[in-house]
Length: 495
Image 1 (cartoon, helix red, strand yellow):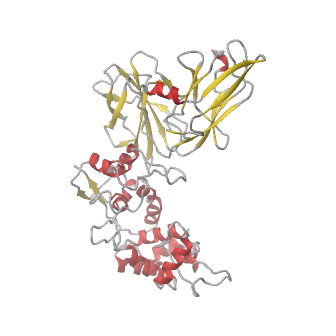
Image 2 (cartoon, rainbow, N blue to C red):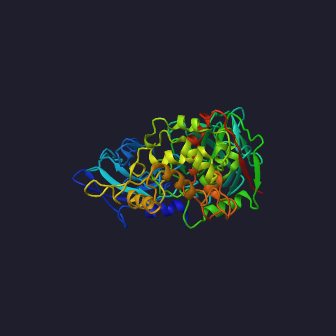
Image 3 (cartoon, rainbow, N blue to C red):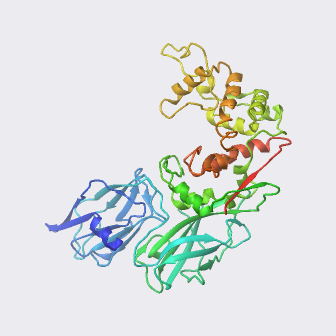
């Protein structure tokens, strides 16, 4: 079935009845408050033709659960009794509550008004999308870039693999994640054809010393025809979402390169289909399933070969150059961790862990030395240490999601971490053989901890596809405070 017609049969339907010169609306849904795909276009059918000037985004709107108006597009459909409510650019946020609101100011062509405001709540599924897939019209199957790490002085070049005919035209917009989420910049001058499947941007994009992530939305439609759908950017038949990065320069220097026996596409497909589904944590929601192109962006090493991004590939095994004085400077004002530079250095050396990583891990897990687990563990109902003596856990070991402080305290007690020094030394020994110096395959970079390219899909430290990248700021900041760091990088390379 044509997906647009399917949307009509599944949409919220308003049955309008003329009573005492007013138009009343009764709404009904077959399944209560619906959970919808983030790309869902509402098709609202009235039983009377509508006055065109009353069909607008003031009288028909979508709000989020805080009451904020969301920038959707409202338009008349195939006939004047049908209204299309198209989602925001690249779709609603996943796993969110929204309200479709229709004001009494919507009027029939004869001037009759709705008797009351109609308010329908809907929820989006907790899954990101790479675009729409309306059938029978041009549809983009995949997108690739001339440069993965695009330099600030280069124009983006897009290679488009499209379905449904050669008469398609394309329009391209990008969003810089450093900007407000609703800001998009057009890279084409309206709709254009893709010569040989290739479109070159009309603009140069900016990067920064730490790189800039961009979302690209490529719209497709039948040539010389108005698209069947519309958002605040343009009309379209389908759109496709992907991601790339702009940097000031790339630098791998004398980094070690490790070759893996699979292609990047094979790696992406393995990660997409692991049992514990990969998620993309953009704000605070930890459950939103990542799209394939989210995975592609973060798993592709070529996106991160600049001086900042390559910290994902920093070797986490012990290296000389970091001193106890360096670590003490970093730990100043960090609660119970202050003054423990020599202990961290000794623990790192004994466990064969980069001391900067060990300190970074402790700062993260203890909230800069202030957490309850780092300061004696939990107490009983009388205010005394739960196990009779204070215990210390600086790395969140055993602090599972259900009752993390209780479980973390128990782990510290069972391991006899009765002093901060014992917690640092013991925690380092616990971490080392499980990932960084794992005898079954060293996962000795942030990238390898997240993706495990030697055995992809197994023994991966996190489900968030952006986890390794999110660890960079702390590591980068620590290394920038070290006087004479010895840095060693290992760059993955796929077939």
